[in-house]
Image (cartoon, rainbow, N blue to C red):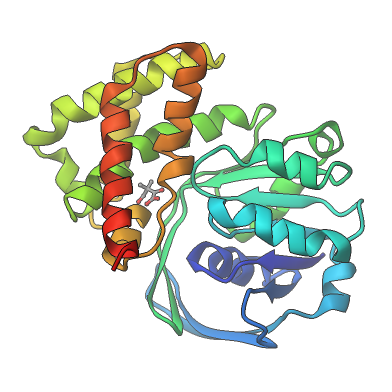
Length: 299
Ligand code: KPL
């Protein structure tokens, strides 16, 4: 396939480099560069120098697939700019942390098959020119609209690039589960500027349980029944599996960048309000992250 990866952050570079073993890949970026070069450090400690074409409008127009890997708050702008450059038949995969972009994406691209994806693969950029793959995790893909629901074969291509990947008949289920994990881990690791593993300490357990209880109430009201203790077990597993990682929100706050809080805890708070459910702990965490962002944006 001819694939355009929109966004050249850690997640975009990870999928682009792995898919390039079987497909023709180009990157589409905000900066008008004509190539993207970086060293890819694999999980086995091997370094591969990689180079990709970037921002070729002809290649974009003839893409069989577009994978959007920008942050949730950049999705609308990115798609707004691409809309006139791609056929209405091109499938578009949206992969970001958090939830809440799907209605605007559907409104912007009403004809294209839209697929949502969520991944637990871990990667980061220790510097501008390096991408490090730091952990393996499950990726889910699933169709948002009817046109996309027929495209389950796509999961095979993603699986070949980075296993394990599976197609889910209702992508909102894995999106909600990932949201629960992000609601628990991301704000706390950003506020306390700690690694994910530090949340396993006794001092965090009550707060994590309360966050999970609140998320479980909202998830259940949304049609995805679960319980606080069940979510807490899943959160605990991720804390252990990613113990040495700094969460994406921790890194965003540390580097004084905008965070995805409005699409993680903010989305939860918004859905809670719609159902008349009180989520005091999550609301407090949302406010704390907004305050942190405000402090460095005001400087
Ligand atoms: O998705 C993550 C993130 O950092 O955004 C987790 C699962 C918390 C792993 O760090």
